Image (cartoon, rainbow, N blue to C red):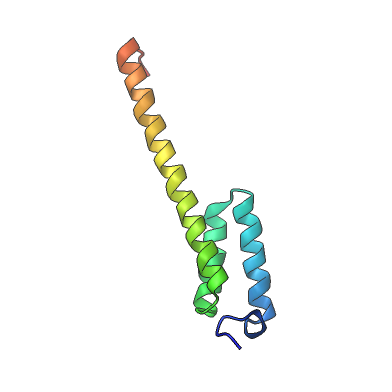
Length: 85
């Protein structure tokens, strides 16, 4: 039997992982990340949880980058058109 086989992961941990995946699929990345962290801490060999946690982090980084880009663009637009805040 594989080390990260679902049969070896306690059912409660599988439920937490599913809940985290649902949160992530709805864009609630910060809360999903908290749950994924708990799952991985309790079941460190749960590969699916590790993978989903990485995807969640990638999504958070992507949102942060988009937000910074938007902030830079809005500053440039204000400068070009002399718009005061």
